[in-house]
Image 1 (spheres, rainbow, N blue to C red):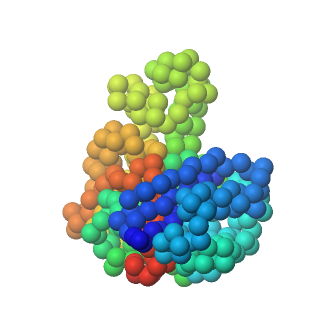
Image 2: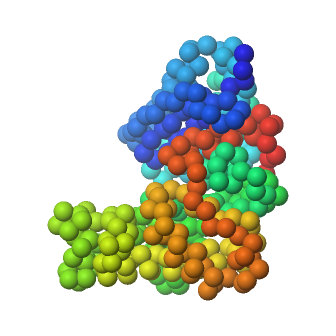
Length: 328
């Protein structure tokens, strides 16, 4: 029987459980919507039920399961796999998720935050394959990240490394969810881009005309992708929103290149899915914030794992738990 690995992505909106082989091919997938009202115990029960379904309700070893990995949407203590908290669902504080799953399935388990999981997934299965040094930045409703040095995921002294979204790019700027002001997340996340676009459309109806039209006439329906589409059509309002986004992101990426000298910065999540309208100006603008040698050494690339980034990352964590990847 071929060895199998189980990846579990516990996000704020969805849970995805996948059975995979050692190449990262997803053999079977269960997706469920996260219901915050069920609390931590209810969500954990749902995840275990989905895993049992994929294993055909057989004991893990009988099903060929070698290890399990979990990417969790919140901070996690490493290597104990104890969840520190979830910002969306109550009851996760202090839950020993690694121990509970090891006791339930009888195989090695690695639990990490979802940004680290996605980073490892891109390194093993995606755009980072074959790289030794890279930075991953996930730009969605928030901004997370991860660092890889020497082919290993770098977690830091308190397993908090890679919080790219909370680097300050505009001192005194908009307040972030972390309580500080001017964080990259508060300026370049999909949530922040949409907010700036809506504010512009409401403050200057003429400047925001095309964005309003694309949103069906409702300024409150303007989202980040509408701003990028309007900008691509030459709309000055959309162009301003995109230019500001590129400026702040280029500042962050340029600083990362100067500091870390990676082979690549890989951008994943919903916002980078717009493609060239983001990547083309970003690559040019980064040059203004970066020394020549680190700029020339690095590529700025789109992620490859797409919609499955979270669960592929969890599968990569399972490979780490099985001893098939170097631990960070």
